[in-house]
Amino acid sequence: MTVRAVLGIRRWRHNPVCRATDRHEAWVALTALLLMLLAAPAIGWKVGALTDDTLRRTVRTQHEQRHPTAAVVVRAAAGTSRFAQDPEAAVAEGSMRASVVADWLAPDGTARTGTVSTGSTQTAPGTRIRIWTDDRGHPAMRPMDMSTARTHTVLAGIGAALVAGGLTEIARRLVVWRMMQRRYTRLDRAWAEVGPDWGRTGTGS
Image 1 (cartoon, rainbow, N blue to C red):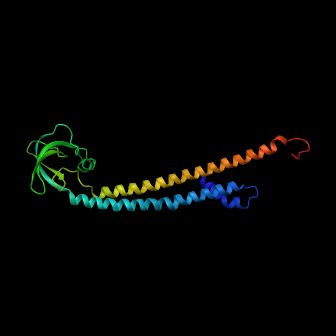
Image 2: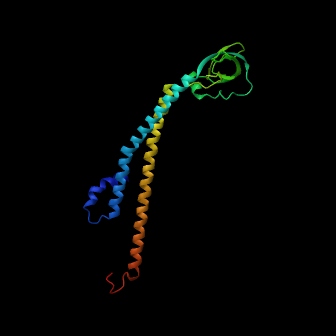
Image 3: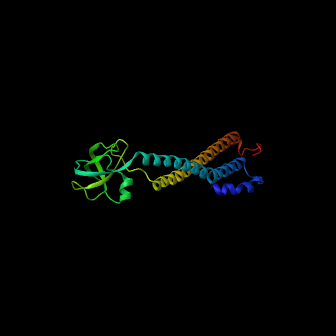
């Protein structure tokens, strides 16, 4: 409908039976189309750029503050660690996460013991596994990598462009609906004025 209305602008401009509301509706459609083709992609690019900058800083910060550490399994853990559900690590390592109690050293050399998660299939007591810790030696989730950040950036940009396009179309429909309501109101008013005399002799109708 939008494309038909836009194509009809030139044809309707010199059409004597074309109503003003028809031309207004066509201009609304043209404006909406231009916004979808130009503004929506620009918004998507801007959101993607802002997301990329934010995620790049996040990646750098996480890699500065989180450290891979060797830990020794003490025993299997009862329950689930809050670090066990690490979807990025699970996908990257291609394995399920298991919770274990392990010993490790904090960056300052302090001995630590706690419940951590691992993607290793070897979780017998005494097994060495790799975990991630923060600067204080507490268990932490694996830092985000750049490929994951780029994926989030692309998705954010595409999502913003789609949302902008969708909102533009919704706004166009609302404006056209409002215009149609005003048109029907004027028709009802005009009919109310001439309707009682319609078809009567001498009324000119």
